[in-house]
Length: 201
Image (cartoon, rainbow, N blue to C red):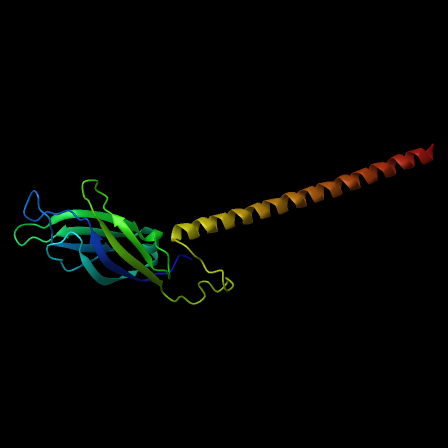
């Protein structure tokens, strides 16, 4: 059974040291805003006027499917709002959904992927799993999955490997026990035949 879907809240907190594009060379400011995309949905903050250190403090919600938990990415793009012409690209970065822990706020500063785009964005993501009855019912209290999806998958792989090792050892031990028993019976039978030969002399 795959991991459940749920709801994801993305909080765009602030930026610092963003690229200044207003007014051309030597500019000291921008009017930055952030576009957030996830699984076909797109949300964006309001622009902050004449600053390279904006404070947004805006929250957005996204629906998350089970497949999204494995395959979808959160894509963040920052732009400078221009009244005339197209908005200037200030940078972008991506966070795979598989990296996000469930039930724990994930707060981080993210630098842009492009080397020529200075600055960082601070954000917080909270992934809340849907309540699926019986999903973790087999796990005792205190042993619920923790960490990111990748860490949970690594832990499951390690558990499966240990289980296979135990099963293989059990098979080998059973074979050795059967071999020893067969050898003991053959030895006893040979000893019995030898004794009968001696008694007939």
